Figure 1: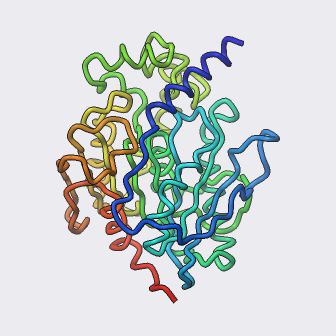
Figure 2: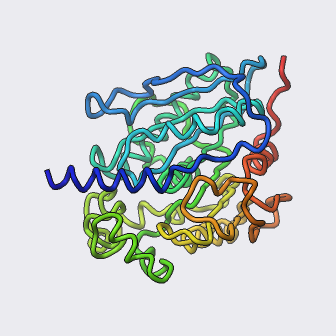
Length: 339
């Protein structure tokens, strides 16, 4: 009973933190068809939602469209991350993309690396069904916020790491992606507490019913790894996307709110620094006045502090949906014109 009460509190807090919807600053409209609750692998455990995805298909015709895979954050406590895609679908289908909302298992259903295995299985399933849904299997991007941003980053940097493929669902097609959009995702769990804003750990502890911030044995990160993070530094390293950064990584767009009280901005800065050192095209937006909130993509935000590598190309002053689409278009190539 106590575990259920704590989980209920966590999910309530998470829902409040992530309640803001992204502002679709251009091109919105109802011009898409949705295919919901498609199973990319059998449910595990039975009746759970972590192996489901939703597809949003542009009605405007055309084949071989780029694909955007979207995953919402929940501190790994939820198994319905695919719901985030419904907020993004009007804008991105209007720009010619197929949008897939992908759910992965929660930390109470399976521990790391299960969540990485899940998103890789979803990408393989989407490639296997590319012809059916008009997807170009060579132009796939992943996007996520918070724990979903971590999932997107992990998928991006491990596309060629055979040991992390797993055996969930469809096997055979590759799971690599060609672009990553990481909105305030964590990276190095053992350094989060040292990087938190002054007083943020006190708020974090009160919100989640903890005493030791991210290092608490009941923290979201400890739950993901199935052990208190301080006791398993090797597993923390395995769950850190920076561990896998090489020159083969796809292009990244990273955005973080300056006032984020949940995931420190330094977590994104370290990822950007690693990508830059490896020669990967990357852009990092530090958004003044923004917190841990999906509204980080709102065009109403103040201009960001922007860092980019030499090969990243031009960048807008804010990480809006339009800016993200421009990044995807530069990286993946333009979507086909309406038929």
